[in-house]
Each structure stands twice: as structure tokens, then as C-alpha cells.
Image (cartoon, one colour):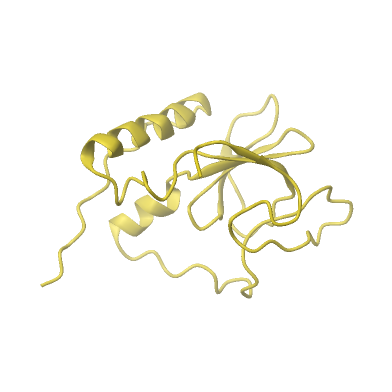
Length: 147
């Protein structure tokens, strides 16, 4: 799938979707059926921490709120119209109506060649700058090679 957006509806996102438990929520929410607190392993390495805070996409909610989420579909930053961005509640189930991605599995910064990685990181940095979240992300730390 190309970078783009999807509008709400059952099955419109890659991971399994569940109905939102928030009363009056217009759409659906995110993530898997795992129990709360069990879906995120501890972030032990610099690379894991970098990848956790790396935006993968953005949800837009019916009230205009936008939420940046990571590759595990965990909310990382949010902003409401007219307000600055802030760290999101990582355990929130977001009732989004529109979803768009900043990269695909093919051009993910941790697997793509350097020339594609730079392009992807520039795209992500542009979003972070537009949100007032500085400084831009550095290149990913090198991964240790297993012998």
C-alpha cells in the first residue's frame, strides 16, 4: 500500500480492530485484542526507544484531534485544534475517522537502504516540525550484528 489515507469503517486498518469502549465514539479504535499492559515489551535499547517514538502514521478524530502513532499503533503524540502537541496516553483507544501513514514496510527506516531511509526520515521530520516537536529525529542508531 502506498502512503495515503483510509477513512473509517470496519476492517479499514491493517491490525485487528475492535469497537471503541468509549460511549458515543463515532468510529473505531486501535490495536490488538491483547490485555492492557501486555502489548508493549520493555524498551531496553536505544534503537527500541527510538523506534517507539518514531511516528508511523496519523489518526484524525471526529472532533479534529490528531494523534501520531508508532508502528505498533500505539499513540505517541496528540494535538487538538489550536493547541500545541503533547505526549499522548499510550494506552488510549483512539476513535479515529481518518488514518494516514508516513511510510510503508518497504521504506521503513530500519530496513530500507540509506537513500530511502533519508527520504523517509525527512518526511517524518517535516511532520514533527509542523507539530512543533523539535529537534527532528536523527538517523537510527546502528543495530548490533549477531555473530
